[in-house]
Image (cartoon, rainbow over all chains, first blue to last red; front, side, top):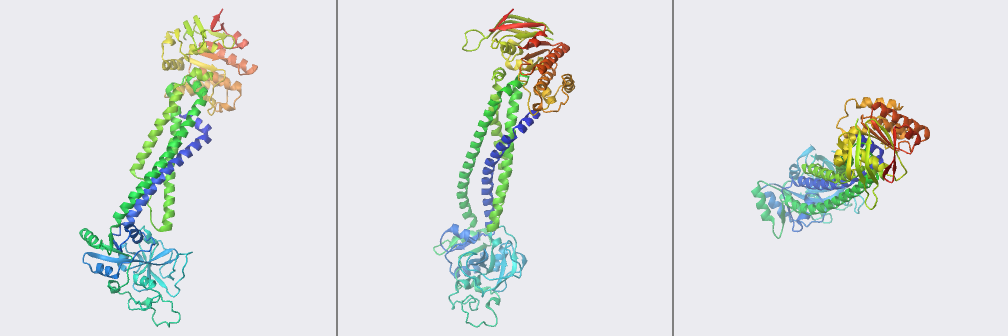
Length: 418
Length: 221
């Protein structure tokens, strides 16, 4: 019987291949949707792990999380410097670090912060944290090396803006990989970001230095460049320091976390657990996934119906052959088994191939996304996927019995006569 | 080898007033070689189908060596036919994509979980006997005469007690037809099987013991 099935499939190889591919593509669609949504959820959840509590100015909680955790550029309102100073001094806080958005270098965002955040994000893979104003630490995926120098650019490559040629940062360290957008960031002392934002205000002084971002070509350069000045911890703890759009806080205990969040949810500030905000985002994502899954299931259903039609027509066309088999002594059950076996083999191969294709497609999409954003999207099968495959195979087996039954019931005499 | 004792068989098709087949009595002895002749539409194929159990007889008895086919269910008739009848048909009905040997063995493979002992050896012997040397050749590349000879080997492979041929030479040229006719008669004689041939072929009919003449579903003597 297997020999007969094999020779049958070989003879009709073009049609068999077409059906296998159609089934595979329809299945791959559904599988890729499921895997990609799961990857997005897992990846973003991991990204939020390092951020226990984020404080920002009143506004959108979602935007605060997207900017502070995922480094999505957006114009956020600023918190006054007193807030950061208060948090740094708070006994319930293990550490608090500002996150300020500055310029870009190539397509990498320049983010101003303090050394506390570098440790909080998993520490350095090589080099040192910044000690001078002009030091920079790069993320694990940034394409520069220790010791490189660069000039910040106002906008992204291809966008409007210019280069601050008078400012030169020096890379002194590289962050350990985090699997988040921070892998593509360049971290600099927040003080330099403040100075960059106030480049038209010569009276603003930070760390006791004059502003090196000022566009004043005729000013004679003092002996020591301001960027060589060492970092001073109290410049951040100064309540009169310029504002920042977000502060990442590491509370000492869970109880402290809740109390801090309670305290900073007011008219003047916003405090969120990124995990909670993300959960709300997932609810929306879940709806999108449901719709996409229904569409994909619809596609699979249509493909299934089309294949059923093709197979049924095929069985009818082979009436004479089936009649001959019966006349020669093949029991009805053997005829049923041959038709059922062929359909199951073809559709089953398509299903399994589809799972493989869907996985490959999801992986490809993920790595494209990661190289663009630095955000890792882990693609992985779960136990539920295996159950789904089993169910699909079961449904296929059931549906395959319809044309098989048709062949079973054919009377050999009338089939031979036709 | 079974002998036939057929009584009171009438086969009607819906919508037709007169029965397609009406035979009050027919006896065929074990090992006898019988031709069934008659014009088209005379009921030859219907008679063949009833004798082999492909069609169920509406009434009467079709007794082969103690087994009355008219009393059996469709599945039981299939099983009986697989064990007792070798069939040769006008259009050969070999399966393309399979070799000559595979075609000869196919009915037994489908009827049993495992090939019975000695089946392969018997198949090889029969293929040699009918003059097919390239047994692994896919059948679709063979000539029509070769194909029908493979079909004859297939019919005898399971050592059936009854061999039935429905117009075995009608699709062949004169020479191939003569060869196939000779093989059919000789092999049936060698096996001691009862042979029933429905045919227009005068030379084939002439080689058999007896000729039944059918006209409008009735036997004419």
